[in-house]
Amino acid sequence: MNPPLAAVVLCAGKGTRMKSELAKVLHPMLGRPLAWYPITRAFETGCQQVVSVIGHQGDQVKASLAKAFEGQALSFAVQEQQRGTGHAVACARQALTGFTGAVLILYGDVPLLTAETLTKLVTAFRAGKGPLAMVTCRPPNPTGYGRIVRGAGNKVEGIVEHKDATEAQRQIGEINAGIYVADARFLWGALETLTPSNAQGELYLTDIVAKAAQQGEIAVVEADAREVEGVNDLAELAERAELLRARINRRHLLAGVTLQHPASTFIDEGVEIGPDTVIGPNVTISGDCEIGSRVTIGQGSVLTHSTVGDGTTVKPYSVLEDAVVGPLCHVGPFARLRPETVLDEGVHVGNFVETKKTRLKKGSKANHLAYLGDAEIGSGCNIGAGTITCNYDGVNKHKTVLGDGVFVGSDTQLVAPVKVGDGAFIAAGSTITENVPSNALGMSRVPQTNKEGWAERRRKVLEGMKSKE
Image (cartoon, rainbow, N blue to C red; front, side, top):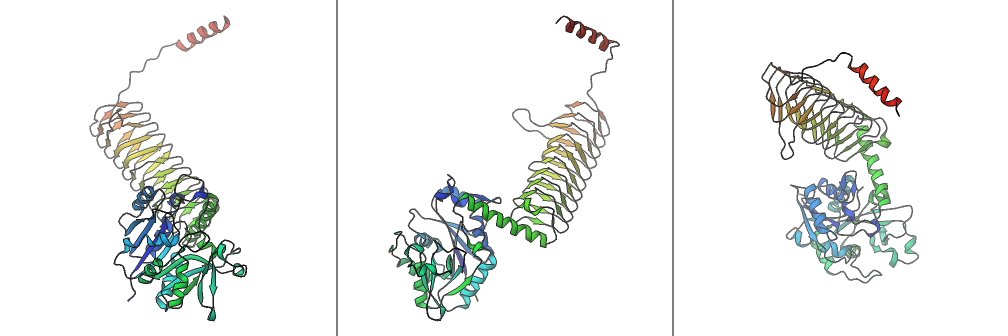
């Protein structure tokens, strides 16, 4: 039986080169804070506990990550002073008191690392004979990175940082990716012996590699250099995001989703999309979206934390936020579904229609230029162009309730709170301030008056005024 696995994710750095007041690990990348990615990979790899070591803007980092991983086994440790990576890992020891398994060490600014690589690393550790396994890579230019020093039998003996390396050592192409899994007892003991005998005057985590080599053979997993690249500035953040975006898009393409222009399509990790769905250019799908099968999402649409049912069409330039759209619906173009919008099966919400905290039941239609807020609309209703639910009185929000089969004429104002019964008609141009019974006609028009010859007389007056100018 495999021993338990925990992870320590280092998130304490300030990120000076980001040139930003925001902590580096909180910078967004495809809708998620940067640190979300390594923490997620740790849980995917089977970690039962994950400790995030925080420092700079610790309260903000903790609040953001705690919300993102609510209900999961994520805890926090604080590194008060920046004394190097070895010290940062040691700060997590108390949070893992009593833990006797293996500890995975990751970094909050390395977002492209895959669960596949980490699984290989853990497997290599468990199959090995030493207290530590590590990830290495061979970048095109190893300048600035710690070099892997190997000895007899090509076994790893240690790591030498670039600043401390000899000229011969700097010719080594294999570098340390900084990602390890280590036996917990070995790890805490090795960290206690670290000394700042280096050019930086810091406690290097890399020094534990030489100590591990003295106790057994170090298992090595070599990764693609791009996968283990960190983020040091906003330019690198954009570059890493582009690689991740391409990776995500390729995964959806291989799963049967058509992306008409992948280079302009932005889909967050974690978004679920069914097969035979077609996504147009310049579409953004972010947050925890679930898109069904045979869905069409038109050009320029933006979906955030929303669900779209099978066979629905979202026409171009529509915006969905925290909305639930059922199957076989038609949305847009230029529709806006705000939070707590629910569209049941077969609903049509057309161009320049805005909804908020509103449910439209099966088969109802609001095809043009309407605002429906704080409303419950029954099945089979028709909402005419220019209809507005007047839900706000300046202090409180009120609800509009329409029964089944209601017909609302164009340019109608429904002044909430108000109820319209099943099968009722609302005459065009009405302002409805009282409940309308089922099968009744609600109407509030002023009687029409026609004044014969008025327009001709008016024109003569205006022409006379113009001639005097």
